[in-house]
Image (tube, rainbow, N blue to C red):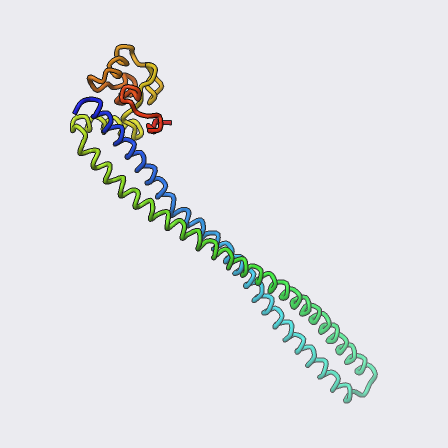
Length: 250
């Protein structure tokens, strides 16, 4: 295999490996995306739980107030019965005062009961709204989760295909050259091959010595950048169309 063919194999290998890296990176984000969606559901459920707790607390307070009303009514009834038995005005006035105090207490408790009833009505309205919101969020989240699962399946299939293509490229590559490429890419963010253009390495934006650039254009041997050590190629010399994207480091 001549130098130009070797370079073409390495370029294709790099493209596939970088594609695989992008696929892996996207796949790695999918679980977090699903967790974030489920967190949206959890937020609405938590709001519902808070509203339900407030409603239960209000109901418990109302029952307590109703028992206090019953106690005061019983007390007032007992005093009214005692009115029939008293013999002095002082005793009568004292009982009437106790009855009035019971009535005042009942009025206060009933006012609070009314407040709780109005509050419960507002809470029930709020709960209905939040439950409706929960149903909408759950429907939306379920749809989005299905989309994520579909994307995950598509990425898994793409990754499997890329793995097969990477294996094919590796089998085509010269073993010594493949090892050299592997060493370089491992220290250069996965990019072991870089384009040389106008006496500049586009991998590190460093000027290439004129004679070295001539060697890149002639393709009689594999040339490495003096600065970044990436394996250099010329798109023009290899006659690669501009539509062929060559990944370069940021």
